[in-house]
Length: 77
Image (cartoon, rainbow, N blue to C red; front, side, top):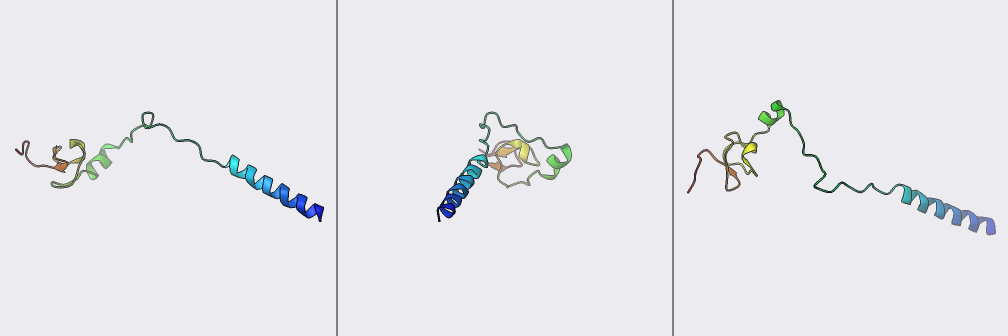
């Protein structure tokens, strides 16, 4: 009976040790993360049409992002 208890205790210890070794690697801070680089082909394919949502002009086919939308004209005031 004591052998069964010893075996169970060792098995639990080994499982816990395996969990510690398998812990995830901490991620890099956002400042150290490199931005993705796109080739000219994929940059052209991924451009958004007029009226689509955008963060900056590089995402739009017209290269104009106004009020978070791809725009056709320079000023919309």
